Length: 248
Image (cartoon, rainbow, N blue to C red; front, side):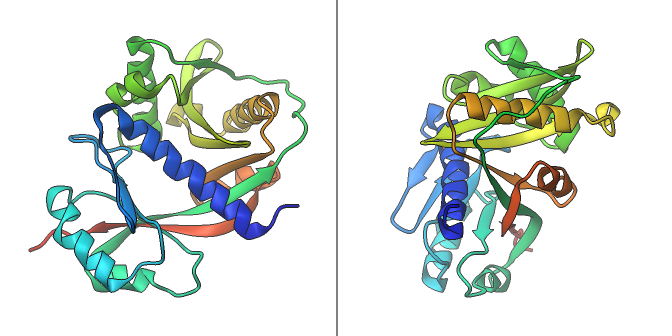
């Protein structure tokens, strides 16, 4: 079994690399020594600012007085891995927590037995991208714009999930080294409580095995966490996601 800190590091690397890849098409990824950010104009995703070290007041003040003046709606994920409670600096500087996620991973070496009610299709056209975006919005309540998919689908795998011939959900897989990150697994409201998310996850895990991944990572909501635990994932760290409150 791999070291827990190493597993966490690979989880974060896959997630941040996904955001970077999704924002490359219009040069919206900016890298600096202490933080990186993706800021796609007029879009909700992947717009994130990630500190590459534990947060310090100096670097946080710099971000507030420069980057966030131009892009005030960037979400700042805080990885609860430092043991310093430095998230308190965010709260002391006018940031509000939007939501929390659990970083989870699964060391994988065999396929799942599958008698699935779900089929999946990789998007390849603008029409597919529009459908995927509509399904994602219905599942999660915010938008990943079709333009993002059209410009990044050659390097990011966007899947549409079908049940009995009807499109019912979304998923993303993204590969970094021998790690498959599973993201944006969502089922539209009318398709829930039928075991479809479980079937969809097993399909995605089998793809990871086929691609010779040794580790699968994801970030779960509190609601979704139980599904992943049942599939064998380990709950390893907390992600707190912050946004700067508007100045009154």
